[in-house]
Length: 216
Image (cartoon, rainbow, N blue to C red):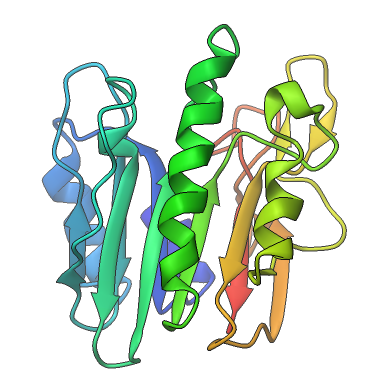
């Protein structure tokens, strides 16, 4: 996985569904070998995913914290500042909450309330939102366009898919939103790169999500 990430030559990488385990130290060493020597991670919560952000340059832990809307939410949001490049990253994963739509909506309420005062700052909100613009309102499909309407730039690719459901349907649920202080140069979903398969059904697939690559 570290070699696959390194093949994209990222300056900053946001990993969602990260679970610290016995291979944590070895993985961080391998990321450092790929040039991503600086990292921050959300506080470990037993039974929940975390978010790890790694960078080529120094990271500073930011002040934004997710509220305990559900036990799974606080460890799925990580805010960092990147002093060298003078911008910020809010790495996000909204857990699926398919059986608890009210919790999903509450998470989106928090994202929108948090995003509004950040519009004038150079910041990107990026990650797995478990929501596609094609989803119905009950599954928060309308929230993406609402963020755009409030002034955020949707930097997600116009084509390609980021996740395939068990039935094989491709959807775009990984997104990036840039404040007006930043400019999107390019974005794409990367399924395979330099022989590394990020997503797919084969045994060589590293994940069930494509990588979302954004140049800004």
